[in-house]
Each structure stands twice: as C-alpha cells, then as structure tokens.
Image (tube, rainbow, N blue to C red; front, side, top):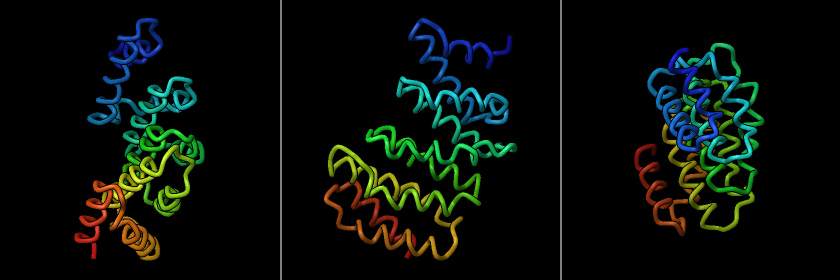
Length: 186
C-alpha cells in the first residue's frame, strides 16, 4: 500500500489523532507535490460534504492546491458547491473559500470573473457580526492582491473600487490591507 493510500485510509480511522495527522499530511502533499495527489481529487470532493468542519476545511485547502494540476476540470464542475460555502453563516468556512480563491484563479484563469463576483459580494454574506464581515473583507483583499494581474480590465476596476471602499474600514487589519493593496496597484 502506498503512503498516500495509507493516509487516505487514516482519514477514516477511529483514532482521532490518526485522522487529523493524515489530513495534515495530505494537505502538505497537496502543497508540495499536487500531481501525486490529483488522482484522489474525488475523495476530497466527497469530504466537502463531511459533517465535521475540519474535514470540510481541509478538503477546501487540498482541492485548491490541486487546481494547478486539474486536467479533468473537476474544480470547475464543483464551483457552485465550493462557493456555496460562503453562505454557510460560518466565518471560518467562508474564510477558507476566500483564502483559497487566489489559488483557483491563478490555476483556472477562465474562472477569475466568477470568482471575483463571489468575492465582491462578501459584504452581503450572512455572518454573525460586522467584525466577522470585516475579517472576510480583509481576506478578500488579500486574495485579490494575489490574482489582480489575471483579471480583465472591467474586473480590475471593480476590485480596486471595492478596496477603495474599505480603506477606512473599522477593522484596523483590514484597513491596512486595503492601504497596502491600493499603494501597490494604483
């Protein structure tokens, strides 16, 4: 049995330490050697439906890391499901989507406009507090900064306008991200 198969089996272990250690190892493999793990992408797509959020979050991270080698276009097929997590009402779940969006855009430029539309709507997401929303806005700005060069002019303008609206955000960390973004891109 290969090391990857052992780790995949480990995710189903009854031992919680084995489960999480396996997930962590699979995430590292997806970051460093995504091609080695791509044949198992369906396993991670199924994990998006797991009742345990840590499994979902790990699946989101791993799938995003596999985007650069997604020769079968599987990520495009789950776009709606992946971005549907923005409406979960859970900051951490939505943050995983936003944090990974730049990877998807860089690997799948044809999805950039759709991704941008999703991220520009973070201000309207159902989140528990305004502070949660401000955290997500900051994460969107970070993601935009990592793929702005991949978008069409109309989307670039929309992104810059969005960031300008948040240069005086009540959350200092988000305000700083907006200022840095604008200093770099204007």
